[in-house]
Image 1 (tube, rainbow, N blue to C red):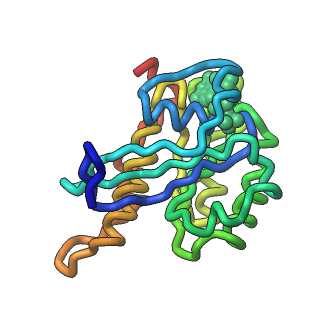
Image 2: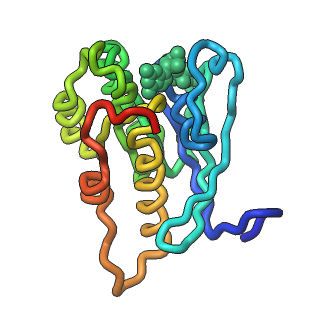
Image 3: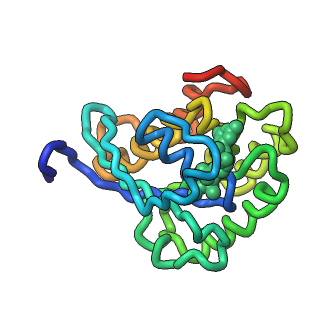
Length: 205
Ligand code: GDP
Ligand code: MG
């Protein structure tokens, strides 16, 4: 299918979830615009979704990325939102214990209402704030392992692993859509492990 100025072969809906303040809007803006807008300004902007076309294995994939501004309290997120999302990026803030503790509740909610085969990724955001860290990387890894979902630490501020999160999701969804019998199977966990930056702070990109 074709839009006015960009050609793409697939469109996938991706949703950003997680407690208020974990950095969802900044994460989206970083990916879409390559910028970091600090402070409260961003909270008042209120974005429903933004489109971005990425190329995976020479196939153009349009990601329609939904932000959940104002609906972060998981109980109040409309379940209709989950139903047609192909991927969910679930964020916590490595400097906020409550945002990490709430991940289990988010996952319970997701498993109840999302599509069975939805791609879920757990992201520990604000990895640039290492000195204020209260959640160890290992704790994030352990939780992700328990639920069988890929994990990495990210920073909307520096850009670390932000693009990778979306690319991994795009690749996984594209491979599912056009898996050729003779093509090697794509493993999102392996891909992320091979690509992710493990340093807590990589400076500004
Ligand atoms: P949301 O409520 O989940 O959409 O969170 P926001 O995107 O509005 O971000 C909440 C606050 O965290 C803002 O003050 C952002 O500037 C800040 N923030 C977001 N991501 C990062 C990050 O990766 N690093 C740092 N240091 N601050 C961040
Ligand atoms: Mg927001």
